Length: 147
Length: 140
Image (cartoon, chains in turn purple, cyan):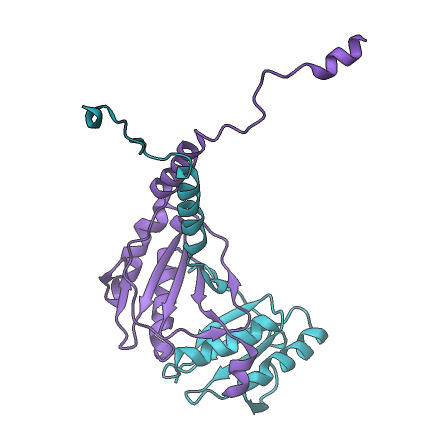
């Protein structure tokens, strides 16, 4: 008999998920992501990318990557500033001294003569930053067949 | 004065029940529209400046990139030269690597050759699975 009584007993706790605080949680998440997002301020340069099938993803934190842009006319930009070729080592050296894990990404236009790229790699060697990537876009087989 | 006593039916509160839906909708929208610009490329480690290694000629294979994009293959010891298209580099290097795993692939580029030609060849060399790569400039 006592068991039957137990069946009839109603629970005092509400069976609904409390939804009144849900909005606060959602807005909190929204604001958290908005605040914690960091945008890179570097200006995009107008270059034509080289393509390569062996393109790899560089698993490196963003702060460890330094971009060297080479525009079609051969101008070199580091952090939005024009850098003469002979000064690249002087610019990179302090950055590398501060961050030993630095990876230098060379973002060169596809039609830049190799002479320029070679000068950059020589300057990088002089500065000690020897981890370099030649930034490329993934090449699709279809594109290749069309050429 | 019956009009003054009449109670307003419309609630004067902001409806909070749908607020969660709106907030989550915004959240999901921003999550899905965010694009991360990934860092992609061909990684390579340059030799230290002081570092200069003596390599015996038989462990070298040269890929000389010419300004028109064609590639001259030169095996270290022999004087023999072979002109190929860059697409053939992978196959050639694969065969050579199978015979000699210590082989160093040296990409020698003409100073006037466009950067993309050099990247094309480097791409082939990477695809062939070469571990030891050397980048050089062709001196006149």
